Length: 148
Image: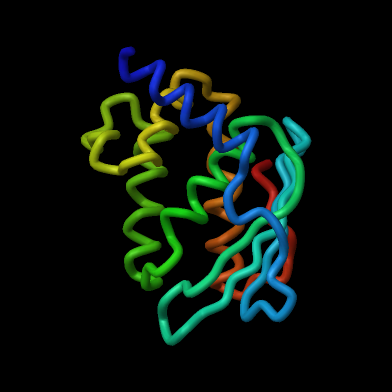
């Protein structure tokens, strides 16, 4: 099995069996996101303990990349500080958008599965929607986030 097959399997698994799917009823932070091009819609709810993301969930519907990315993101950021989230967000953004990225996908663990998305520019917005939506929640942006 090569790396592309492994990454594809991770995306399929997280789409079919999304982790942290649902809503936190008493969330400290919340934001909604929408990708008009693909029809992806999601809501992210977050609980904080100090500056750490102590719990995070997402709900909504979208394409396989959108759902898998949100699932992978929630797993990766739980327990992280806001500074750690910001650094990880930057790395994932570079991985998704730069063909000459210096980011080693393997260094990002399961998030490295998103590396293949950059070959399909229209899908980058699907994979990045959850990241932008979480950033909006952290910034307490009440306006729905759109990738357009």
